[in-house]
Amino acid sequence: MKYAVSVTDTKKTEEIERSGLELLAVLESYQVSLNNITSIEEQPRGMIFHDLESATKLYSTIPLPAYTSRDLIHLTPLLETWKDIYLTTTNGVKEAEDYYRNLEIVDVAEIAAHELTHHADFFHSEFEDWEEEHASDMWFEEGICFYLPRKLLMSEERFERVMEVERLLIEAYKEEYGEYSLDAFGEAGYRGGDNFAYSAAFYDYWRSTRTVARLIDEYCKGEVQKLIGYYREWVDGGEKGRLQDFFVQRFKLSSEEAEGLWLHSKVKV
Image (cartoon, rainbow, N blue to C red):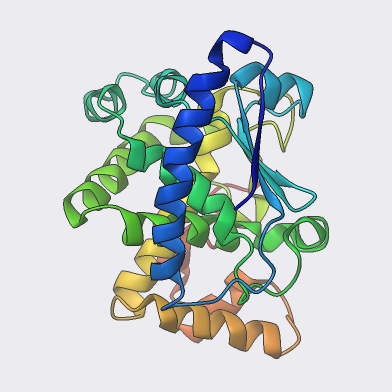
């Protein structure tokens, strides 16, 4: 994949390029594994490696230094930057503090792979067009774009550990941010208002990834291809109604089960 480097602090140029090349090597391996599940016919044009200021102030105004725009993936590859970001979200959860203080390159590669997975062929439209037209279904794409990189890049032990960390963080923040339905993805953070805290931005990514994992483990016998197949049923059927309602019906979920998966609201928003 082609790449470029954009920095506001030129002293970081070599470090960012070196870290970026390390990520590209991991992404190459990831895509080989991903090809067993899906293809990416239209590859991103390339990746821009940034320092934090360049990603969030020069090229964008969103707080997260990882996003796709105009077929380009934008990302800061610096491990210490991501460590600092994640440590702001721990909210006194010791397991989260321990995990984020010992962040590894695979945790940054997961973020890069997340952006690449948005280009997977099984999704029903270009991500940026879909984000405008199908906002209520954003949770599924965001959730599976984290689930697949974790499953394919991480050891089973690390996968289970990060999922447990995020479960605890959801519990730590749900009183503050609420348990609204996932069709309001981003409600807690900058997408839904003016809360630019990292925890507010991550809250629905955590919840969406957890819901996707639970649907796969508890209702698809652990087979991600089954959930993707059900998603394609909804797409090929004309996308009638909300995706989450389709899943509720497809898996014959009770109202209580749907609420537990945040597919129905517990609190009206």
